[in-house]
Image (tube, rainbow, N blue to C red; front, side, top):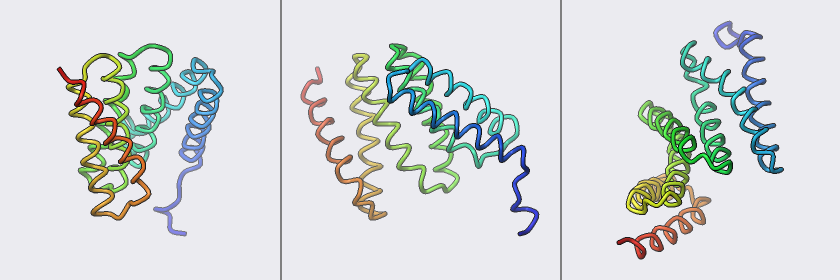
Length: 172
């Protein structure tokens, strides 16, 4: 194996530790311990934010965005919509950046987080912005299905279209 492909042991252990914190947080959240999950997401974020923002390891940016999205869902369940929106916007920013830099997989995650934000914004009472976000998400899904052959996304796509139609009917 060439030296440039070797990951230093400290970096590998930090990567694994962040994954462990994230996965454990997902389990806690699914079992109803949302506060415990948030604490673990914070531990994972400490590692990922340092790796991406301080050490410039952009290979970990996707993982960071996933943690932001998961923590946003947890914060929303705890009733802090403001924190949830901030975290969601951070995830959107990362996935948009990854997409601009040629990461094809980021479009799916960007679409998911846009639809999550739309639902959050709708619950906060702003249906007009929710419609706009859902339209962006649906356009991305359309691209993934029609241009990239992601037929596995048809159910999610149909659900979003149905939700968008319902939202449009209720607009002032």
